[in-house]
Image (tube, rainbow, N blue to C red; front, side, top):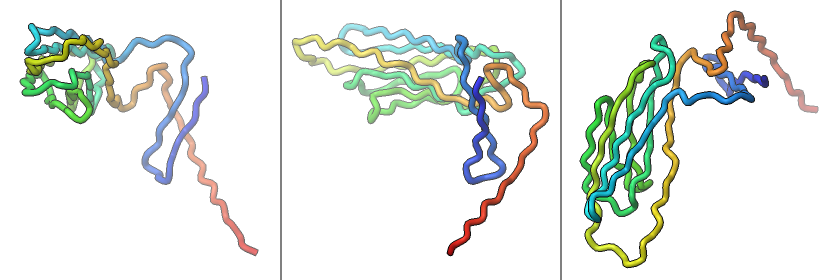
Length: 160
């Protein structure tokens, strides 16, 4: 395991980064189902499930899923949090402030599509679902820091 502590120009913010060589299951599992109804609308159903223990809570969760570039008139409903259409990125962004462990939430969105399409069928792109979140005091590897000593080294530069 490689570990390093990063403290960029500030004392209170201490972060640890590390690399694992083993497979890890996703902490928040997102399933998305896209249904096209005729050529006039598309429906997206997402289910997000936290796969960590109940005592932990993910904060500032953002789930971004791509939508067709010509989608309009969004109608979005969520069981928790809020979701919005981001036309500049051809995406829908679902935000949940607090996502406790062992919970599952749903988001359903319906978009209108233009009734006139080109004769050539363009292949639908399947962009990955982007999930961003923070879990304070949680490490995937299970590493637990019990005692930490910080040393501050002052460098003095002298000019000749």
